[in-house]
Length: 285
Image (cartoon, rainbow, N blue to C red; front, side, top):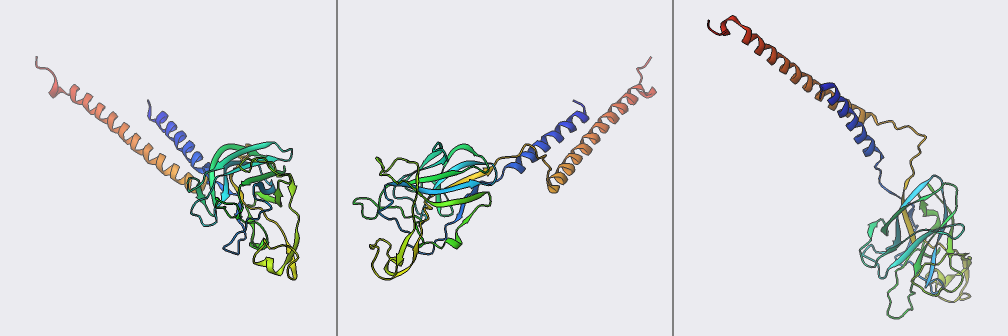
């Protein structure tokens, strides 16, 4: 193979390599900050055994890669939780099970499980939900707490990725579920209620006790997901300046070395021919 062809192949390989490295970006997290302001994140008996979550719309085409569930102390979950994403027509787009313990990968305050890459189109409405099997009063079970309402979270501090727009944080299953460990489409919105002074500490006290101090709003932030942006085929790839410099320097050095070796080979061949044709090297008569 000629030096020119070798250099061409080298340039092609380096360009493809830089392209792959440029596009290999880490997954983004949809819900970045839950706004938690207390060590105790409540799990009310009203939502135990149901599927709860939140409604959102992507601002760009995204691909869901992982589904997650809130791990309050980041030391593992007490029970498994199924997580799913539905479209507005109640069609389940993707689902997965975050296992109990530390089997799921931990990122921030959530444990995740990998799922098949699922495309969610920009501007459309989706609902993410997670099973909440047991409450604090369920005998024989240890519940997994999660961000639930304004007693434990500060809505001002809740933060989402710029490519995920929150529509409603209070989706839940209105009707009783047959199997508390199975996913059900969160078909309703949990309505706000008056908040009384004693409930600012213990939200399971009956409403009506004490003096009303505000409104109790629900934020079912138990589930979360990770995603990558769907590449836009209309956009041309432009390598970063650093990548271009490395490509040019690397390929040029190989080119110089290859040409030098080729010249040395030609010179050696020429010298060998001159040496053989020299009168001093001719066969004796």
